[in-house]
Image 1 (tube, rainbow, N blue to C red):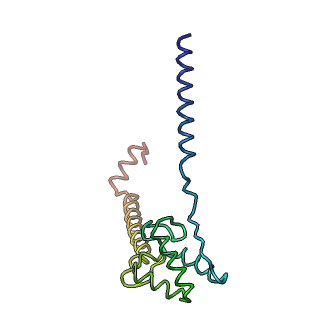
Image 2 (cartoon, helix red, strand yellow):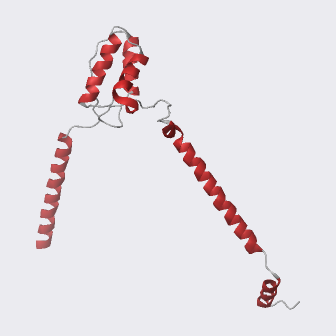
Image 3 (cartoon, rainbow, N blue to C red):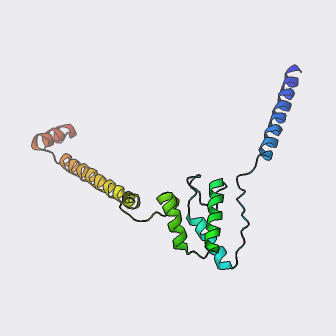
Length: 168
């Protein structure tokens, strides 16, 4: 009887702790909420350009998030700056150049092809080719070793015949 009483008390504690964790988890803000900016545009084309630029430019604070997906203060300021430049009539290339001059290659999700970024663009291909050359060398060496082992000299053939019991 005492063991069932202890067991039921531990079950109640476990249930209480589980409910406490569930309430804490529900009270925390969800990360699925996205930043909502209320920018006014004159045309749908301007709004589309804003969305496109916000998706193409990286948040300098968040490392791997676009300006449209970031909730950071820096991203909010940059979105406001993009809106201002669009409303002033600047082109996408001018806005991108402005951001590039201010933040460098990091701001672009797809960095430009320059001498400084050549390894970034072609590095994976270079490592793939090096890996293929190494794998081919290992395969060739393994094939050569297996071909050499397949041939028996005269003494090895005689010994094999003795072991097999062939008296020819």
